[in-house]
Image (cartoon, rainbow, N blue to C red; front, side, top):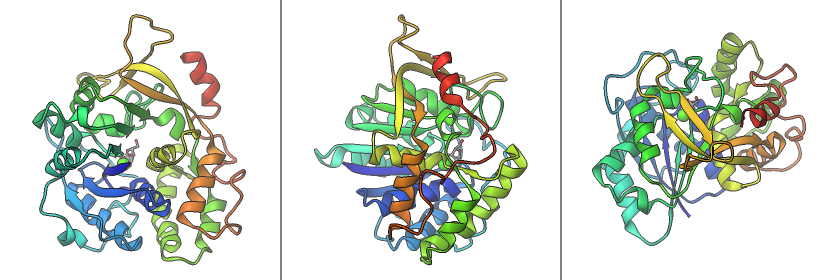
Length: 337
Ligand code: RIB
Ligand code: CA
């Protein structure tokens, strides 16, 4: 596998990058996009995270500063003013590659016979631009894993999840592009994976540069979830994509036809048609419908904070004592499917 991470760091993007590197995934390049923050900040933040991980050898390619059509949508960020909960202050952007994100995606996909996997954990603008620039691009990508969408409710509107809402046309282009293998990790499963306060405190005492960074960075994230959801904890959206690449038992999927609304009040909403239920529909993706939360935290904690033992046992880690926003969604999801 050659892994490209397309992201908008973003606290959970940062955690996803740390997980990928901590687990020694072959991250070949990072491409950045506007989303949680403006693209210049995304780029600087990606470099900050690579610096924390001691991996500034990995190139960062700056990408789209706005969606395919229209201007940057207004949104409040749960990631702090600089996108990393106050830890993104370092203006490391000068370390970015001079090759754009789209060119990097096109070049990487055509470079060798080694299959390319893309983890898309921000708005899908860069990848859509690559599809529009080269109709063969999709056929050269072995596996596309997307954090986005939802079978149920959204998070930025009642209908839409942030990444699909931010650039619905890009999501629409991607879903029509004919990628051979698309896995969509949506809010239905990420809503069951919350970093809880106890685990965050245990991370603090790991005593590594990464643990101090994660502890400080997630403070804003916890505050944002307390104010928005009334829960103590922070949703591990993007890291779940990486955990899926590390262990395909963490998530369970349903084959589905997925389309994204590009206009109207529900713009950005993902309409999911499980083919098991809607025989007339042809699947263009797999949609995650179940998650092993304990397995996720086992993978995450051991990879980002290696040293076995002192970090909380995965059985308690991540289980928010209070009902998470999507409590017991698996049953509800299966019924909906
Ligand atoms: O809806 C969650 C997604 O939006 C995550 O990728 C988060 O980083 C934000 O970009
Ligand atoms: Ca993201």
